[in-house]
Image (cartoon, rainbow, N blue to C red; front, side, top):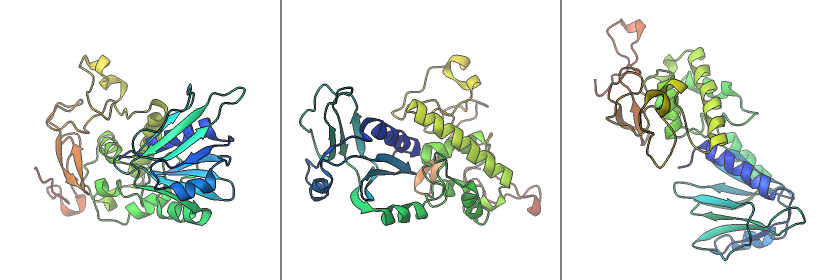
Length: 295
């Protein structure tokens, strides 16, 4: 499933391409045909994202609410020589005609789990259910901290809970926990506020870089392929990472083999040396509050 930086980048691309222009709106597949006719020929006000949700705004407080799900994609063609016939199951197509200083443009949505025409109240309801998004300037990290500090669930589970933090997916979960030297099974209520703020600031920086580059890179300069003299990572997610999908490979920092096991419905990845299980001082130096299942 696309992570929050993908949706933010997509919203920016859609706004840059279509905002302020009259757009043809259609549903070649037919599932959005009735709603498309209501929007056809209107001016697109702009696009925005919150977590993994995308919103296209039209006049009259009308919004197209989109969730890409696992296989959805929204291909934007900002400077097309022409607009070709749709190919495949296109749920939503936007078309902007050529203007004196702008080329024709189009965008095709396929495979989304959600594409609905809604009002402002429905948008507000979605936003109210989401935790703060590290990519939004109006985000309040204290909302997430108040939930985290009261929960006994593993921090690795809460990071994927969109009602706690919006937009964080499995890659960012694994990588930010490694960068902060936190085991994914550590009980959330054992974190100090400074540790949470370090997680938040790291996510703000990493996800903004993901928007800029269009991929997830999380390694420090001294751990890049060039600095270490190693081959670049080969993975369909792209980018250089520490532990995500590196099961059994040596940690880039200490050389220990990266481990994995399911957590909150997704595979969790960590280095057992750089991210040791949490040991509670209250229970004594030998007690482990939540035992590493591999330890």
